Length: 418
Image 1 (cartoon, rainbow, N blue to C red):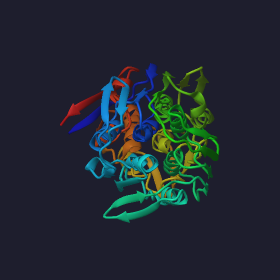
Image 2 (image 1 turned 180 degrees about the horizontal axis):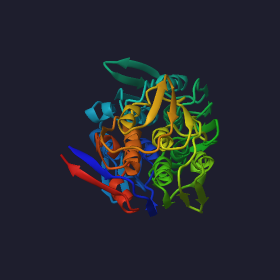
Image 3 (image 1 turned 45 degrees about the vertical axis):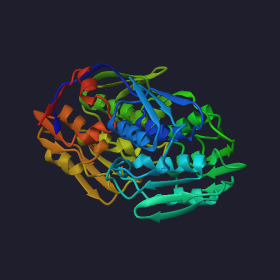
Image 4 (image 1 turned 90 degrees about the vertical axis):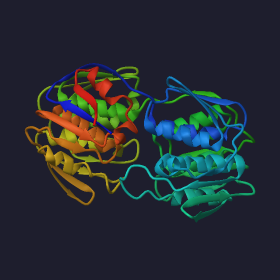
């Protein structure tokens, strides 16, 4: 068991490199099994526990996995099972991407219902709707999703709600369907586009990813390719917020600035300076920033995954901020931990009212989920005294070498075995 120990109150200065996107990597790796010939070599893979978990799942199915630095090679030509039923599957939310890939390639799959961060109910009804529209029979039995089809036929599918997972899963299944599939009210997130680009690199015919209408013309087979994952929008946003909270000046490299526009706009509204480069953003802040209101929305709106880190910044901003969490109903579990440090936050349903305080005080806190952990790291960086963060296995799911990256820009943060 480990914890992070942070001595706060120091500005952070310098440059930090952003890793490959967690949300893209954990979709692309399982989707790679759709290739019936050749190897998929996927580059810019982050060194995080969620990736390790997906790799173990793929090996259990019969894939040959080779990892070298930030590159993963997947040979799925000799898959021996269409039944994913391990503990890794049950704890890993992104394991549901196996359903679409296995259904497309083998016309059947059985995947245990997955878990993930405890941030709210995440039904897969839109996934099921899409698979059934393509011609599959879907049943839930003994805690597993079972899908079967004699053949998949392209059709028009309108998602009742915008769902990243359903968009990726149904898009994947449709790549090998007969005819044309049109997905309407699709998610537009950068990792949806990344998965579409990856599938196209294997020989798929997908157009419109990044808009709310995606058109897929079915092909007969997909083959291996070499592909590089996009930079992590959420990791970048976390460092941007940390720079604004701690003061100083930080350049965040290996990013796509357009993916960060909603975060940049809020930081500038608060009084921070944000300067975009070709593949970098620089955040500079002096003194106390001012309060703002935030509503989380699907991309290109303000990302729900950055709401919790931003909450920490608002805790020490001047004035009253309102956070409206419109995506996940249980994404305020970090609030009680911030209150232990002196924050003034009131939560009513999906809305948090944050009254800025002069300072936070270091204490012992526990991360309840991935982004809550990031929020507490930022709180520790700005707090007076020492902060100890428990539950850091959540942080390791999505932030590679977080303490090393923060130390490289001047933070006093250490990982300790307890």
